[in-house]
Every structure is written in structure tokens, then in C-alpha cells.
Amino acid sequence: MLFEGGAGNESGTDLRSGMVFWYGEPAPAMALTDSLAVGNLESETKHRYKAPASRQWNLTSSFEGEFDHGTIGDTGRTLTGPSESIATIVHENHGVILRRQSDQLLRGQHAFVYVDGKKVEERD
Image 1 (cartoon, helix red, strand yellow):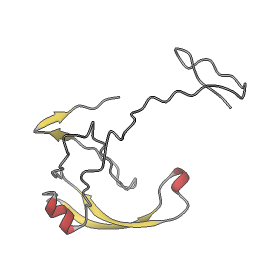
Image 2 (image 1 turned 90 degrees about the horizontal axis):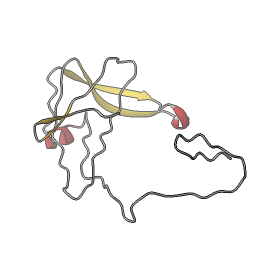
Image 3 (image 1 turned 60 degrees about the horizontal axis):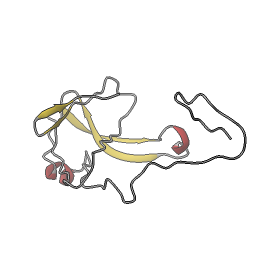
Image 4 (image 1 turned 30 degrees about the vertical axis):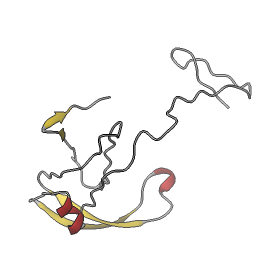
């Protein structure tokens, strides 16, 4: 067992005892409030999804890492140009997590995110 601590996580010990600090909120700080299913016409329409240079794409594959024990199938789109959509976020959320699935065989993918018309800058 290795516990990391100190200013630079430089002190590790194998003492088989320790203390755990949890820095969290007593209640959930975020909740799923919207979800776009690309490739699903009803969901694309609801979210005003636009991808004029795209075509529907069906893929059967697996995730990397601990979830690579089976394959899943999904429908999406392959793009040769930009896409855009609208997401509805409730004010009570303390943040937003954007997730996307992508096929690693299709390289050069990137995204720009705008909130109320203002570009969100990437953070490290």
C-alpha cells in the first residue's frame, strides 16, 4: 500500500495504516441534464444538431483499458467538416462535463466549445 503526501507527493510509505481525507460535497454537485445521441434523428432534431458534411456511421468496437472485455455497437456520424448543437444546462449545476465517443481510426479530431456565444478556453 502506498500513500502519497507532502507538498509534491514525495513521501510514500508501506506502513499499512494511514488516514484518508475526502474533499467533497455532502450532496451531488452535478446531475445529467442533457444528452445528445448523434446518429439518432430525434435527438439530433431536439438539440438542433447540424453537420452538413457528415454521414451516418455504424461502429462495433470496444473501449480501451478495463472495459475492453466485449464489443458494443453504436451509431454516430463521420465528419469532414464542422458540427454544432445546443445543450440545455440547468443553472443549479456547478459545472459541465462534456464527453464524446470517437473512433481512433479517424484522426485529427478536435472540438471548440462555446457558452452563450463565447469560446471556452482549454485548461490543463
